[in-house]
Image (tube, rainbow, N blue to C red):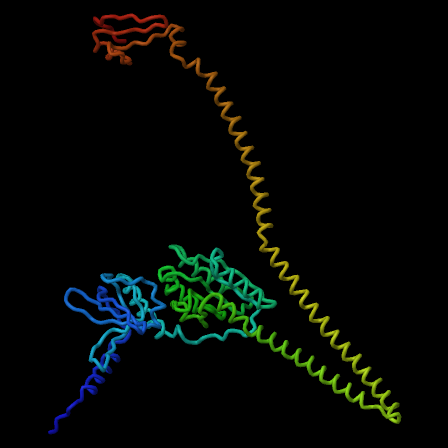
Length: 443
């Protein structure tokens, strides 16, 4: 029986294979220690807890995606894979993402959810996105910058597009219900929709986390129209990005994607127009040279006939070009008018006029309501002034009534109250009489 002997490199490579194949995509929680940048731009540190430590590295190309300002003593959760530096025999975790401690559980749950969705086929069966869409639905917030960027790009690049905006909240406690309801309503539309873009501008992971909702992802997957997910920035991935038919890096990128074919078509038309112009120019130059070569008298008649034929050809060509140019000008006029109509719709001056009219109406109603309330209150005051003398106790006493109290000025309300007092006071309208109680006779 022979003994197998390994070299140091062989054993380190074997350990490297075991580590990298079995510890891929893991989360580790610990405290940052020994933080330092290398001369090559990589970031080295250790993750420590009460009993152990492990080396960690973030490569230079990954550092630009790290939003945290890392410091020694900071408790974090890192995501990455174990690797081994063969030459030194040192293993460490190669970090891809890093978050403050407490967030890792959410990402872990999200990874489990992604795996479940993938196994159920939610990431498959992608519907093709039309190259030249006409009817588009933008499912996004109307208060963010994303919608303005998208509309600007679509209006500038997407000639003849019909843009429908379906406003939704993109964060907050009611956002999930509202987005699911919006997707269901869109799915009930009978008309043909070429593409639905669900979009949200950049933000933190917490801001974008609503789009990791399984309810929203399922509703997006069930949509019968082609879908594009444009959530956050290039480095941000949500569950909606995976179930959508296409993922765009940003909302602006989504607008550029669906208008790319139109732009390419216009560019080809421009190239064809320039090519046609250059071809005609070369033909005219060549014919001019041929014309200059006809100097012999015997070719005079032939030259005249050729000139007449060419003039007719030029006239026909000019007529065709004019017709083509008129047609293109008319199309541009229609598009310009459409853009002007769109500008008028979104013109803030029109909205301010409507708001001003509404404020004028509210001011008029407020004045009338205040006037009516003052009139009512004045009538009530007059009525109370009329009733007040009748309720004045002194006026009642002048009609022969009296008020009887004990020695502490507590009103006596019954026969028994009077017998329980030794001294009573009787108030007339013009004075008070003090009496001593002896006995009484009850009716």
